[in-house]
Image 1: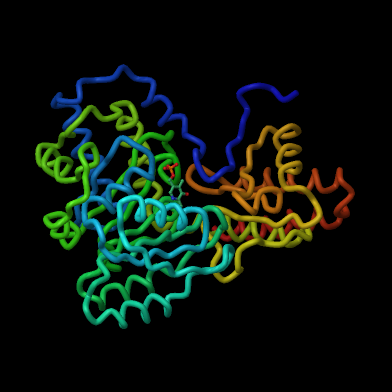
Image 2 (image 1 turned 30 degrees about the vertical axis):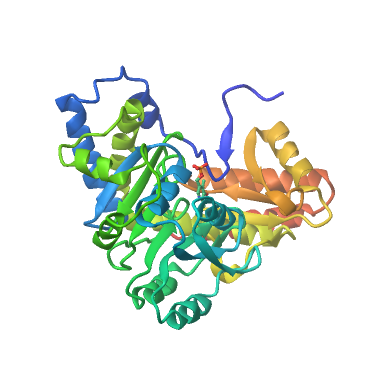
Length: 387
Ligand SMILES: *Cc1c(COP(=O)(O)O)cnc(C)c1O
């Protein structure tokens, strides 16, 4: 039995929370209409714009990442609108469901789970739409269910050539892990959530809105109240919120964003990239196969195929012996893959530890030699040294 309170989270959210952020959470709440809270909203909003590399409004909503995505959809679109949904995993699938739930007409662009969406298909469908009936392109940048990162830069360049379609992008596991320059790529709506790259517990979500997205809100007729973004925009003018926000999570957000600014965007991206390389290369050295196409590995999560080993059993062994929680596969991938999250507050030690833990269990099972275990660590160390 493991010692309590030593759980290491290596799932793609919730992610580990730094001590400073935990301390911020444990403070007494303050009034959400106080001057003190307004100052916090002002500073977190500025820092959120920095993180998104944008001058656009970035709104904070109390709710999980799905709330931000749903808000993006229901504030800018109307019943019967035609939208493209990119679907190559569980989250892509979710946005198709949300779009259909609100009566939108969905054109799906699909790709097999584990492979990236093909940007050319977006180009073709958008070019064929001479009547400009497509009102939005909804897609997931980093598909957490499969460990694939989609080529958002290229796809967004095609969306921009179509004058009416808005981009509504799930950046939940890419923002704060790799480059998502919202202004440079002219992304209209970008959604993210606190329990991922932000290093905060679950409960807040964020949505960046371009001018074009705000313009679209004027025509949107889908029902909304709590998630009506106009109310959030209006209150933000006085650094406030329309409803009671999760005050303590905003304390945490303030600390976490300050930590991110101190580290710097490029260092954050570099850290995630080297962890991705260390993790994926070590997995291969351990005779494991990557589930995602190697040309499009997500910076925040590595999905690993287990072939003849039951991935759920494997996950349990890692949890029981080492108190490290890794994620399983979803839907048809359950038992077939496990996923190692390396998003947010993750350092080199965490990566070395999870690789060692995986190696140790494989050794226990007689699946690898000690030499292979050693080589995997050596290889990982090489990538980690690249500082
Ligand atoms: C975690 C996650 C979400 C948000 O899920 P919530 O449970 O609503 O926070 C959305 N998209 C992706 C890609 C995610 O990884």
